[in-house]
Amino acid sequence: MAEVLARVHNLLEVRLLHQNARNYAKTQEFMALHDPLTELANRRLLVERVSHAIIHARRNNGIMAVVYLDLDGFKEINNTLGHDGGDLLLKLVAARLVAAVREEDTVARLGGDEFVIAMPYVNSIEGVALAAEKIIKTLSQPYSIQGSNVTWTASAGIGLYPTNGEDTKMLLKNADIALLDAKQASKNTYRISERTSY
Image 1 (cartoon, rainbow, N blue to C red):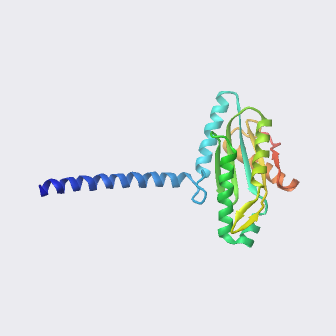
Image 2: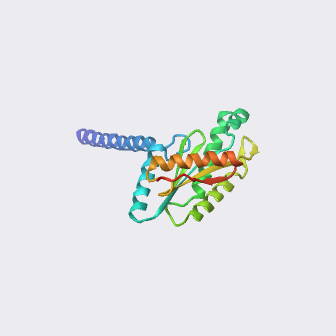
Image 3: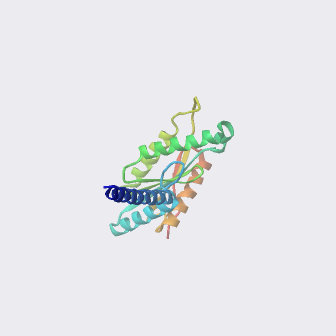
C-alpha cells in the first residue's frame, strides 16, 4: 500500500512539475511579446501585427493604418508626481487606449510615453481621422493620480498603407514624423503623414 501511495505521489509531483514548466513557458512567451509595465504589445509584437496587416491589405487592395502617439510634456509628470505617478499615468493611458479602439486593433507601448495603434481593415482615411480624434479626446479627460485630478494631452501622427509606406519600417517612420508635425502645430491634435512611399 505504501508503495502504491508513493507511486501516486511521484506521479502527482511529476504532473505538477510539468504544469509549472508549461506555466513558466507561457509567462516567458508573454513577457517576450509584451511591455512589462502596461502589458500592452511591445515593439516585436507590433511589428509582427503590422506586417501581417500589410500583407492582408496588399492581398485585398485595401488600406491599413498606424497611429503613433505620445503624451505632451510627459517629463513634467515625473518631475511633479515622481516615477510612481508617471508609471500610474502610463497604465491609465494604456487602459484608455485599449478601451477606445476596436477589438482587431493592436495597442503597443514602445517605451517611455510612446504608443502605437495598428489598425488593420480600415475602410477610409476619414474613419482613421475620426478614430484619432476620439483617442485624443479620451486621453485628455482627467486622471486620478495620488489623490489629485491630473489632465494630460496627447498628440498623434497617422501613417497609411500603402500611401505612406509599403513596409512596416517606412510606415512607422512616416507616422512618427507626422506625430512631430502635430506637436509642432499645437499639440493635443493629430496629423496625417504627407510623405509618400514612392
